Image 1 (cartoon, rainbow, N blue to C red):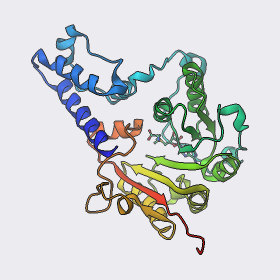
Image 2 (cartoon, rainbow, N blue to C red; image 1 turned 135 degrees about the horizontal axis):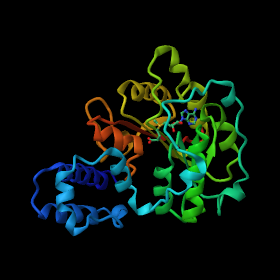
Image 3 (cartoon, rainbow, N blue to C red; image 1 turned 90 degrees about the vertical axis):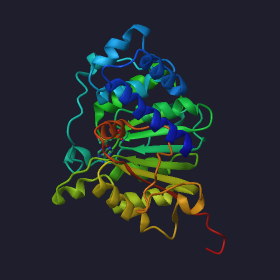
Length: 310
Ligand SMILES: C[S@@+](CC[C@H](N)C(=O)[O-])C[C@H]1O[C@@H](n2cnc3c(N)ncnc32)[C@H](O)[C@@H]1O
């Protein structure tokens, strides 16, 4: 999986170079289309043959265009934005404010998933939801996906997309994950196989660190709830935030192992950050950050299988 993603990232930066080049040979559009055709999730997106001038004269693709390109095969409509008002990505919400202090109850799992016994992946701070929708499309029969998101409008829009796509293995719910994760997940009938926290809001000021989504009780709930062999995937484009999350999970070394210890083919840099994104798709924040030249810091842990004596 890591190597396929590596290809994907190379293709993506190649595409950006192509789009940025000027003047460009006409073959560039063909090359871009070739790259796109090699990326199954972009198969519905192709550059029209007459667009070479367009492609060559324009500035590098904006990151919102890169997002649209990366998620083109979901073919998401935007009409609901009118119903919801403008879905603007506000800087950060304050999860400590009283409006977010009431834990969200678990849903009726039979109502939200066709088969609520399937292994579950939870994405904490799921943002627009495109990332989980993309994964849900690829695992229609074998996995359920749950997005926990504190911004109601994003949850509502993602819910509309789920309905439009007719998916029955993905659900988005409003929740302050820091205080609601345990209550929500404890009643899920199937095993929890993966929890991701991807590019969480950084809350840079030291006095605001307590607003960060990952706090000790959430770490403990995640570790407790995962099935043996279940995984935690974290990433951030902000080193300090990634290091903070890493510290939490590294300190659970008695029960969590970093995956390069288990699978020697997984490569890390000298500081222990994964060299590649293991998911096969980038999140929106990841695309934005990489388009601005940022590095992404990633770790992936696996819960150890305890023997009977332990
Ligand atoms: C920077 S965005 C990243 C979104 C997505 N994971 C990505 O990588 O594109 C962080 C998301 O986490 C959400 N969030 C922040 N605090 C949260 C909390 N306590 N519970 C649930 N979601 C939260 C924000 O509303 C926002 O959508």
